[in-house]
Amino acid sequence: MRIVIDVLIVLSIFFAFAGVVGLLRMPDTFCRMQSSTNVTTFGVLFVLIGGFLYALFYLHNGEMMVKCVILAVFYFVTSPIAGHAIAQAAYLHGVRSEKKMACDAYGEDLKKGPPQPQSAEEPAAEAAPAQDETAKEESET
Amino acid sequence: MKKANGAAVVSTMIVCYIFWLLVTGQIVEFFYGEASWQILAAGLIVSFAVALFSARFFIHDDTFFLANPIHILKLIGYCFGTFMIELAKANIDMAKRAFSPKLPANSGIVKVPVNLDKEYAQAMLANSITLTPGTITMDMAEDGNGQLYYYIHWIDVASQDPEEAGEMIKGTLEKGIGGIWK
Image (cartoon, rainbow over all chains, first blue to last red; front, side, top):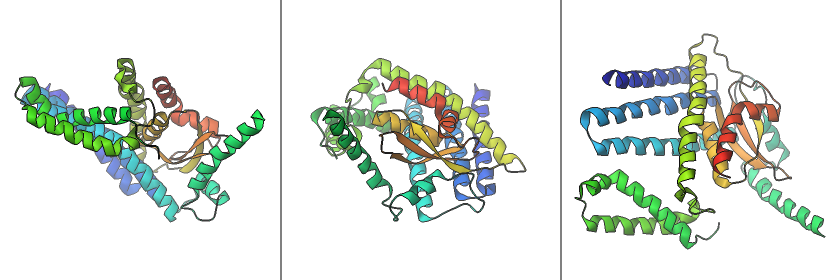
């Protein structure tokens, strides 16, 4: 059992290392964020599983097992939300890659909308259901 | 913002109370029969107060959806089955990318159509995509016809066609989530 725990923790260290190497080598902000998800998924997951098994077989500590599970649940529920927020805020603030992107659908759609980038999505999101309602009314009449 | 109804407050309170029991370690004492009822009652009151203020942010429809054990089993099956396989594939791919000397990065933002109606399903799909290394959901928007789109930053743009890119990024994930939240 000790070997399994050690293998899990070494795997976790490997993925965290890969993530950090990517973080330092990637060319622009968004690619760096992509690489950092390597750390935040398998890096965290394996070390928590290893800690869970260690608490189960060596420490016999129920509280610590439960805390490993809770940490994993909360971590996996909350960390992507920070990912969305940082990526979107960076884009709207004007961070762009030095190389040209292969395609940029988000920028094209922002240009089509109102000129202020911050308020571009909310009117569009609100306008869409309104149009639907008018369309339904027309079809009913 | 919708007003919270009673059932939403109750279900939020139950979830808060369970998490409070787990985090403070009361559940262990509870099993050994050492927990004092005063502490348990205090936790219940505090979780009710928290639920009263926060229920309207969490629960909008289908209050007791997770009270059905079949749904919980499906959710666990998705988390440890479908999602883990995708996660493993993407993690290994991303680790290779980081260590390769040429640093292959052909990044771009693609617009992908999504066919899920429930709010929870949409949130869960967006979070699953962000957790997968190589893709980050940046924003969601609806077009005039009510079709929902995600804007996804993708590190290796293999296809710029929305349907084909969507199939490559989230094909299996969307099927799994659509099976849970019907």
